[in-house]
Length: 105
Image 1 (cartoon, rainbow, N blue to C red):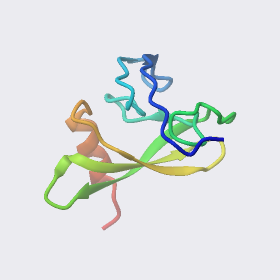
Image 2: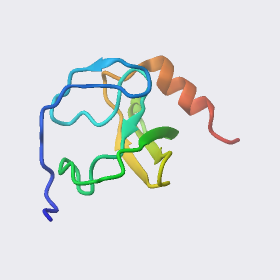
Image 3: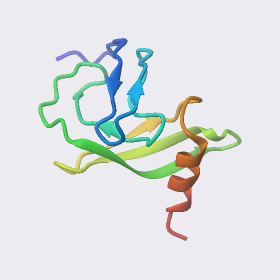
């Protein structure tokens, strides 16, 4: 099993909102609804067999970076695995703000 990132340009249809997503080799979630899919053990390897939906559950903005430079915490609704992913400039501002607003006080 390789520990190196394996870049793969893949387009996909989001399982959550049915948006057609144009992948760039680094795309790991839907830019419209922010959901992901549990497909990797190591980034890009597509070796995970769970394939559960990864719900965005938290947003952590980077210091001085704003919401377009944030980290999104995804949690698999099937097995409970959690993983942080970088947000993208392509991500919906409305979805990022809604996720940020869900945080506990």
